[in-house]
Length: 401
Image 1 (cartoon, helix red, strand yellow):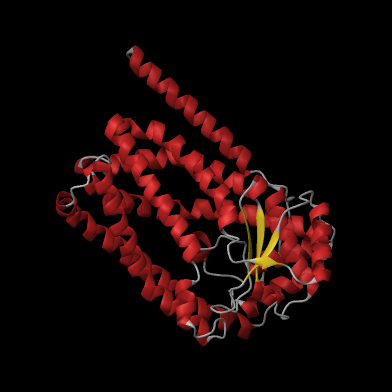
Image 2 (spheres, one colour):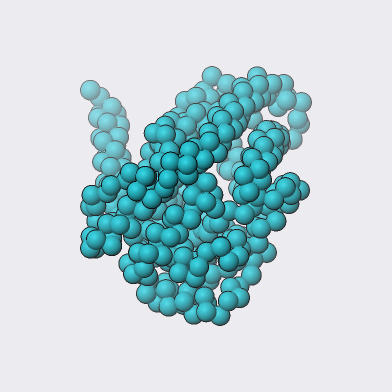
């Protein structure tokens, strides 16, 4: 074995070791080992479970058809991209940006009928109003932000690939990690566009107390108006550091949930902030960026590599397929962090009954299947199932703290 090969092997082993150490540290959560009885029939009737499964079955069909349509579109674009790229005379990177815009518009056009079908299905089941225009225009800020991120990414990839060739990913992967961190930080502010402060003084006081309990004082809690296009309830945390925010959908505050349940939701989201789950997600992204960037480079080598704008549809096709393979792993990590936020909410509120009522209400407000099929659990579920969440509440109530 030559010195060069020895050096490469040593570098690969060191990288693999660092990857494993990083992954093992990120895998840890503060949830104790719990012996959970996740039989959904403990909390839901056969009729409730059957109704949820009928609803979710159509959602699964939409997901599969949307994925198939996206793959087919990328295959078609991959074949047409060389001719398209030759007809655009804006330089290598400029051509790549135009090709990227065509891909994004194609993705939007593909998603539109499936999104409308999902909106119709939700409206039919009382989970959304029949206001399709509101649904179309509601996410304009986040979509514009994501499109900007995509264009910047394309410019960076093509610029690095043009200078470094097939080794661009060695520099590109850490650059993507920094770029993703920058956009995640900024999205903490973008996500609050059009939101307003919590108007209920009793809830404001309760939220401030939860912030103190979870040691995240000063975290803004905003309300987003979504009731024009959905009746489902939700909340999310976004950003990190000074941009960390908690955003509540206004449907949480329309009277269907009691204050105890709303406080549990906020405690859950503040748990995400306390445990820095956004930053941990970015760290996972950094770990996965290297193998994914290498894989895309390998997948596009026959079409001129990523310095060639005509390779972009093929690169996105490779990423789509890689994402499909990686989804079960990504989801299990997400479920661990969501479970940790649930546990944080239980400890912060001390209100097992409020948590139980909240999770039971999700079956009604969102028609969630308490115990979905195994394949759907692996590929689609980013949160623990309702049965798992309720079993955690039961374990907490029994003294597993």
